[in-house]
Image (cartoon, rainbow, N blue to C red; front, side):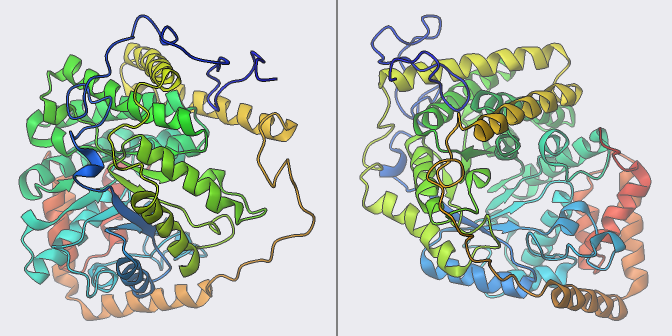
Amino acid sequence: MSDDPRLATDSGIPVERVYGRDSSDPASRDDPGQPGEFPFTRGIHRTMYRGRPWTMRQYAGFGTAAETNRRYRYLLESGTTGLSVAFDLPTQMGYDSDHPMAAGEVGRVGVAIDSIEDMRLLFEGIPLEDVSTSMTINSTAAILLALYVALADERGVPRAQLAGTVQNDILKEYIARGTYIYPAEPSLRLVSDVIAFCSRELPRWNPVSISGYHIREAGSTAPQEVAFTFANGLEYVRRALGSGVALEDFAPRLSFFFAAHSDLLEEVAKFRAARRLWARLMREQFAASHQSARLRFHTQTGGSTLTAQQPLNNVTRTTLQALAAVLGGTQSLHTNGYDEALALPTEESARIALRAQQILLRESGVARTVDPLGGSYFVEALTDTIESRARAHLGRIAAMGGAAQSLDYMRDHIHRSAYRTQLAVESGEKVVVGVNRHVEEGADPPRRGPDYRALEAGQRARLEELRARRDGRTAARALDQVREAARTDANLVLPMVAAVRARATLGEISEVLAREWGRYAGQ
């Protein structure tokens, strides 16, 4: 059975029985070089984790801002070194909690943020100058960044001290996830405005986190994850340059966000191939410096790999995936809770997920040397193959005019890959322990969630009180300034900061833009 030629990685890359010196692609066989040196195959820093551990950034968002704040404090006390905000669906889609479209969704998949008052509660008692904050938000990314900046200004925290990331990756919403609001062109203008604002005002902030995670979670292969992520990234670089921002003023702050799935050695090779390919693309297309060519990335373990059946098996899956990310050289990492296929993670599962990272760092020994699998015949061959396959996709996308013109191409390939995987699971060709192999009779006990109806009612009441207490004329004038900026090429982040200070809500700002630009109708 070990010599079966049909054996392949999860992405369909054939796997030979054994690998040797001549196993890698002769066209791309070269010295992988040293860590910290172009093209960074072995890592972007010379010492990697010997000099600084990866950031342990646990993703969390639970209903209300106050409840989420309690979880953040718990995570910080437990040893996490960075916060990551999950927003509910209405916030992601630009609706206030009292909008009819928000009914039944408030607080369900993340925290509801409607105004500056919610932002104050979310970060109450948390020193913004000391904590790095990542916000997984796209269509309304500029508004959430404006809220964060306005809160820092209120507290007297210099903008130059703020560190963190706003995802702000709209293209992957059109191809893999679906939380878009406006058509592609004005949405890309918002991405560029955030990049330009951060290059001037927030030197420690990552203005876009180009996300392969959602592409992979939607069903792509590893090479497709790399290729489609980089197609989007190259589009953002070109747009930012077109808006007048110099490459070296923003490219060193670009960050990426990848998934880590369970095919351990393929995932390690994927991260190595991605680092090398991005460096080469930036050098080839933009003559980028070493700083601007470095691929800095965050990793999250695979949410789509978690199973509701035998959920404790997910502890093993998550640990295996976290190991792949660390062996692949990630800069920060989120590990999923074992119960996330059932409900929002409990404190216990969040703690276990964080402890998995701490055990990897403190007990496993994998952080003692840089790129410990570098030189493995198999890993080097996989690295070459993934880079080659990703380049082939990028060539086809470039021929179509770039990412913005290739949404259908990327969507189609993701859907086809997802369909093949589902068929393989259903047939038993792809084994999922506890689902189609080693199955146990009897349902796992259901998890109780929060009372979402009460939560939604409370959030609606807070909004009603906010609108009654604020100066309505001041808020209306601030919204008019956002509208006027949308009609010109002025940077929209600045009037958004002024609007949220005037207690204009996220939904009100988003609606102003939707009336100017229209709404994207989908495929």
